[in-house]
Length: 413
Ligand SMILES: Nc1nc2c(ncn2[C@@H]2O[C@H](COP(=O)(O)OP(=O)(O)OP(=O)(O)O)[C@@H](O)[C@H]2O)c(=O)[nH]1
Ligand SMILES: [Mg+2]
Image: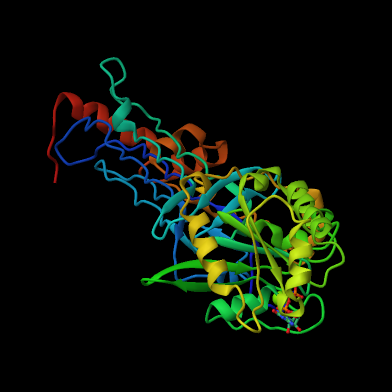
């Protein structure tokens, strides 16, 4: 499915920014002796933020974005100047995106509303400068805090479509035909199984300018929950629907049995799906006469049902009424769903093409900190010490100058 524009699964390597390092600086100014510590704090590292955006319908825009790196915080400076905060990285995602850890499969968060922001990875806090560490007994602290490290995490983003009604049925049951009859959506329709290869959404208008969203997902076959057919990959799209419309064609040998197979598949996939309200539509009923309809009615499962035909518009209004009634039934409201953790071993087989993330070892930032004279003093090598001694203004001279200036400020020109 590499060429498809419907992308509902991406793997991205995310990293927040490191906190900037606090500065170790002592104030230097002409005529000011022992200026004291004035190292500023480091800036905060950038967050990696997810933001829901209703203008996106798929994760296509993220398909080729393998890495998201937030900016690192800047180091603190002299005169108690703060380091710059790292740049936040905002990832725009469609509403209904669920995020999992790519290594463990653990559920991290989900984004359901337009404009909703979730901090996926927090940037490291900046370190405190040496100004904070001055005390009466240590007036010239020659140390400061390093910034907090960055957090890196490969994540998997999955889209679970937000629709009110989900169509569940075997291939060729007439799901796409129903969606095209009820809404302006134009899904592909043909008389062979697996015509629909990716979910379609349609807005069904109802009386008085009211509407609801219907999702047509690819057909489910026996064993779909174990990965047969296309089922498993798309079953998650019905997890968020508040109502499931089961569709069984009238020419099926045993309507009740087909319904039970479908029910069993979705229950194996996620037992919570059984809590959702179900409605049964017997499709292609134009092929039945009254006698047959009466006969079939005797052996139907114990849920609301309706005989429909998208071709001759039979039972369509009745179906819409039934769906609207069930959708607005307070008992059927699905407030939250618990997202199961991903089974990484099983999923990696399904989504091989998305696995080629190259982990990044970018250590350039490590070199980026302010080198203070005091840091150098601590770590000065023998060679450097000799060199310094040979120079005109060696450390010793400077120290002497400082010591003498303590007693008698000279103000030399
Ligand atoms: N007689 C009759 N045929 C129908 C009706 N609805 C759909 N069909 C036919 O059934 C066949 C399958 O219809 P689709 O809508 O593609 O079925 P589907 O459930 O979306 O199938 P997949 O996408 O493969 O899962 C098509 O040839 C339709 O013309 C109906 O109400 N009456
Ligand atoms: Mg279809």
